Image (cartoon, rainbow, N blue to C red; front, side, top):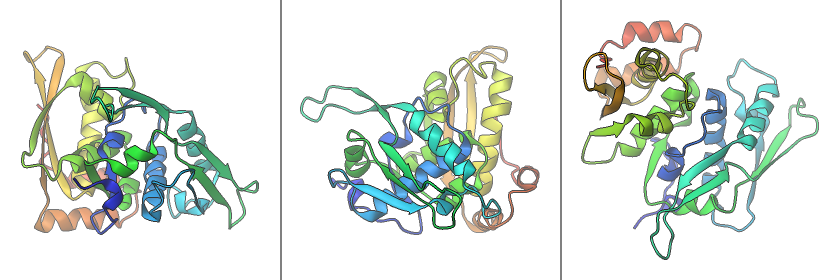
Length: 276
């Protein structure tokens, strides 16, 4: 069976292990943190050294800046600090017995930064935790993640939804029902926050759909499941399909434009966003 380590980054994105797409416990991350996480993981994957013991990687800090307009590295440093503090849960069956197990791990082993972070040639070196490297390298399910799509987004929930859909984009089915607690975990909604249906729709579902439908190469629809109109949300029905023609070209064109005014533009472009 094919593994992520055998896959090459191409025009459809880099192969990110499904186990890392479906991590839980990353709700403290901001949108810029998740974008940087993907850039670092892609750099490690593209090096071809994921399976090497004690492998380390290095790249310019400028490559991790949130936008071309932002010239300093202070926001990058803030993101690296948050990425080091996070402990996530990764489901990983025992290789010998098949017993379901959960790995609690950091996302990175270390960051080693230039002492003068402001100089033009400042770099960041990093390593990956021992338990995480085999997952990144040997997973047999992955989603192809485009850095340009993730970096164009401003909603952490949109990024998570985009990755979930990319992980499922090659399946024969294009509809999945997910219990609400599981869906909240997968999107990284903080426990105990946004529990009211209207708040969840307005703060999580609506911005996620807006950016995924407006910026990615996939179209997504979410229907919320309730026992009755005023009952709490019990689950979601997630549907996805690949864009074609004008929709595909419009998403590409929007990614090339400035983030300034983007949400207003998307609200004018994205019409088929129905929320049950």
